[in-house]
Length: 290
Image 1 (tube, rainbow, N blue to C red):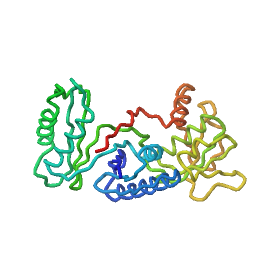
Image 2 (cartoon, rainbow, N blue to C red):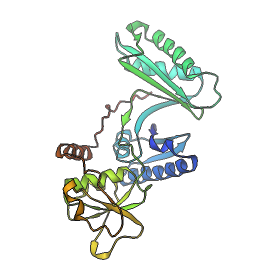
Image 3 (cartoon, rainbow, N blue to C red):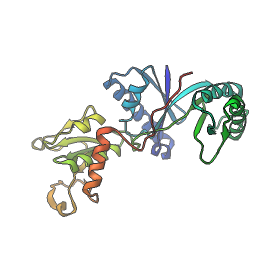
Image 4 (cartoon, one colour):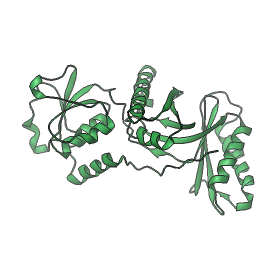
């Protein structure tokens, strides 16, 4: 099975107990989204990374890109964390991706374990091996603007080799920041609810607007009927109101969040398009089987 290397960003800024709790929430959300999309996969976490093993790599990527809290993905080939194993695997990958006259760079990093090599050692020795393995193609090293970059991450006594980053929505794991009620009556309300979900809030929707876009990101999205009272443990309300509509919400003493209050219609439309297509500033999905 292929392995997808999953990275987060803001979670890493938290204290150790909070980070571990958020990692657990993120892992559960990943498993839930994969199951909802009928993607068979094994999800594990260790050493500030999550790992997804699956035979359906494309479907897994499409599913995981909808999970808030994930900053980026990479499809990786794996070997043992020793210089010779890494050198052999990277030279194989280089033969797959480098063309005649291409420039390349090796970008290596490792965790804090006591390895027999540094990140700089990896870049120097692996770079020399790639040059030698592709001497018939006239490739050259370019550290500032290479045609191709081969990335190496050494973690938990394994080396992960990959050639691209797939950018995701980042944010915080859904459900890590409590519950809110969102009034969704137009595109501004829709985007406002989505932005609060991205910040980790579990959203209940009030309104008769089409919220199928939100259900992509939370398959268990709940609707809220204002006649039944505010749901238990609600921390606040979410609105897409403009500045001139500030007084239009009966908040019952709870805070009201308006994440789109300073956005023009062009920004709203751009975010709606992003929600529909799951597009960020992502690079193309590129991976290599060995």
